[in-house]
Image (cartoon, rainbow, N blue to C red; front, side, top):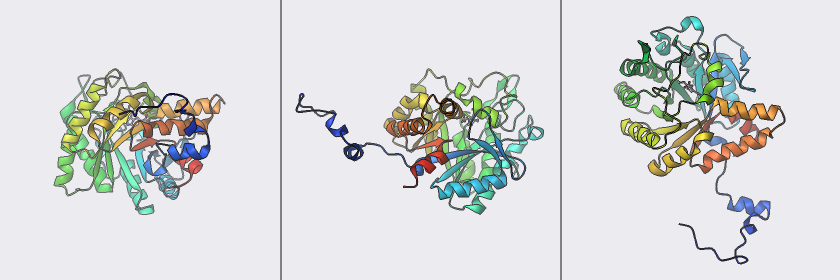
Length: 333
Ligand SMILES: NCc1[nH]cc(CCC(=O)O)c1CC(=O)O
């Protein structure tokens, strides 16, 4: 409800913008590194920091370097890291068995982080695209991504991640019934406190391009992901997906990408009042960084403004490649 405002000059809305002190005092939202999850790419080898060309400032790290980066991130105040593996091509296959190998990159990185910084929250990704020879998030049969056999595989993947010590499991695959199936399996195996942060409203977006380069899925991917990821034209459908995932046992939900979908963030937060995250995805990061590198935008300023937009849209937190840069700029709270 908007209060009735007196007419000018009794009301001058510029009064509360007239100094830095008053602007701070009436500021509605604040950014904190405590609300950030840092996505990190993991690759084979040791001592490796391999730049991702389409994401200036982002590298793929070998497991030892991931553990080192996790310690530094923890010291910067970053509470959570999300792991994405660059699986070697010879370990990608049509049965995607590497996805639930206890010794796969993601699981080794989880254990290494937990050994180095036990209090860092580790989030892992559920989907088959880093392990498949098709670049699709599920099994492909007769040219179609099949739902139910994929969910069986995702359950195995989730259990192997929980065994490795993941705190938060993030199903990004967009199959139907995966949250319920994973939750049931986690409970049955006594992983009662493993959290599910569901990529509930994940759109079939062109903003994932640099990510697919980073995990080596771009070359393999034939076609698109439109039979499972959402149509960017839809909003109501996002609410149905969130409602469904919560009913199946999701603890937290996500909207992805972030900046072009802030209306969805706001609707989800208002409607459900559950922990709501946005993923400021690779393409959003890439376009801001590219413009900043060209001197066309002030990099720090647009980083801060874009991150603030998520808070204003109602998000409790954000997955962002900017997490360390933000932390260095803003300092711990
Ligand atoms: N399951 C795949 C996955 N998990 C996270 C992202 C994108 C993240 C980003 O662009 O930063 C994707 C890409 C896709 O769906 O093709």
